[in-house]
Image 1 (spheres, protein in one colour):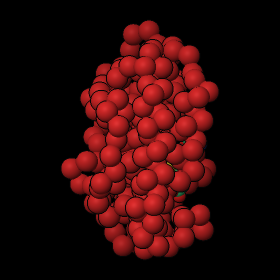
Image 2 (tube, helix red, strand yellow):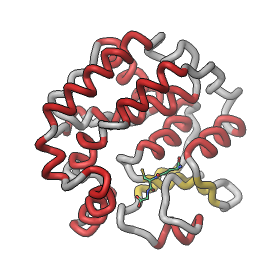
Image 3 (cartoon, rainbow, N blue to C red):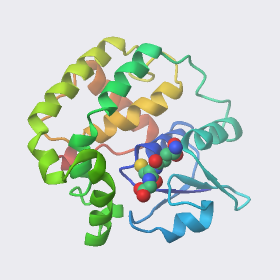
Amino acid sequence: MKLFVYDHCPFCVRTRMIFGLKKIPFELVMLANDDDETPTKMIGQKMVPILQKEDGTYMPESLDIVEYVDQHYGDAPVLVGKQSEELAAILAKIQAVDYILVYPRYVALGLPEFQTHSARDYFENKKKPRSGPFSECLQKTEQVTAQVEALLAQLDKQLKSPQACNGTLSIDDICLFPTLRNLTCVQGLTFPPKVKIYLDCMAKLSQIDLYFDRAL
Ligand SMILES: N[C@@H](CCC(=O)N[C@@H](CS)C(=O)NCC(=O)O)C(=O)O
């Protein structure tokens, strides 16, 4: 199977996780962020992640891909735990502000999807209506980092195990880890102890790199 992604895309990280967690071999293809043509040919719109199944057909939508792989590959399904409304509420609050920190950093990390000026400009132009110019986002780093750290402190109290946020692996892990992983590109943002251990553990289990070594 082939998975078409952008490295920074949290929806793509969800799909990469299930392959890592179940140790299922797959081919990872990073598209350029301004490549409209490839995804549009596959699924009729410019969106990733896209899974190319073994029969050659294409499947969009991260959670559909996660469910398909979990149900049909490897041993028994692993995402069997219950979800938590409290955790989802904290995650939604983080996602309501974290883009101000991560958007301007994604384009500066040297990621495969942002190798050209044109790809970086494409991304900023697309995101600007929500975030404002990236230069202005960067000026809000201190203020938004404090907001995110306060929410991470709440999350710390919710985490049940380093291997599964609610104690047993569930869709909540698939939704939570990508957001936390992407926040590791923010230099100076401090993760509380249990969140940090969860991050490191899930990165290892999912076989997905964190951004600490290139944080900006
Ligand atoms: N509901 C979709 C959302 C996927 C999505 O929004 N992907 C973004 C990248 S993070 C995308 O491809 N946006 C189009 C673009 O970048 O131009 C899913 O869960 O897979």
